[in-house]
Image (cartoon, rainbow, N blue to C red; front, side, top):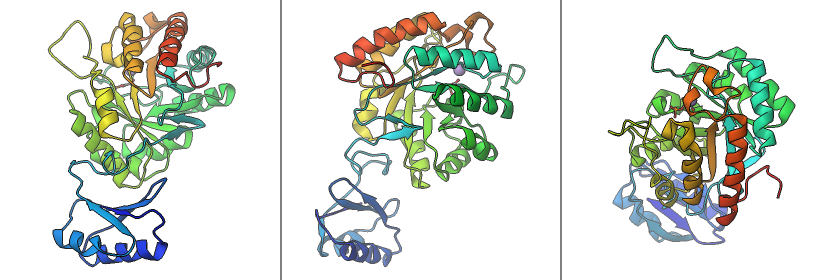
Length: 343
Ligand code: PEP
Ligand code: MN
């Protein structure tokens, strides 16, 4: 349930409600809002507890929360959450946040060249995997710590914020020391130990939809992170596996407005993994922006033919610059110019 306090309810009134809820063996979760305080009790709510607090001083109403996800739900937090990645605000009607860079960090030269190119084209955040989840154990699995050091150098030189993937709970500290945002990949969307671990540290989390995950499962995975105390979660639609074989995945454009309706969390789109084909990235990126995405995640490589991972879906610098010009037009049409791009 959600106990909505009256506007101007006093701290002693709020404390009294929390204490009363605890008497029923339930943990209250204070949720400060812009206008008023709410107190959530999730997982185990008794009718008796609801009745007990309903008429207490300062209480406006007690609302049942019908969705299985709670802290991720718009029922609980009505206004858009803004997640700050480095200095870049994502969500809440802020300018479109474009995250771009190679699938994998392969070398210093490759990463720095890409960082400079995506920054010049208007991206605000550099993406790139140092720890790579690969379908085959015989393919390139990333440079690990060396890749993190390269990302740190790219940020120091370009000022771009960094988003990079973490694969195991044991790597969370090392990745969080460098990253401005921790990526949880599709393959790990339901790795609950990893979700708990990123939920217990303060850096924002970019949570990618699992390849066969429903929208509700994605939101329940977000709930794991939120429930551990980290309220900075960005959701990412990156396509789901269907019977279609011409494309790597089927990009679910429905998910963008649906997630924004069900949740207050920012939603970004990944048309690179969503399609698997470089020539489909731009049209799908534009569709995602038109559908209300708060940002984009796009793979870019100096020489896609030589990429150690995901070359076929990576854009050249030139194609990325041309995509950004097109995205800017659509973004402006829907009232969201690109963060970092000249006005
Ligand atoms: C990636 O972003 O390079 C990646 C591995 O993505 P996903 O987890 O969506 O497959
Ligand atoms: Mn990739």
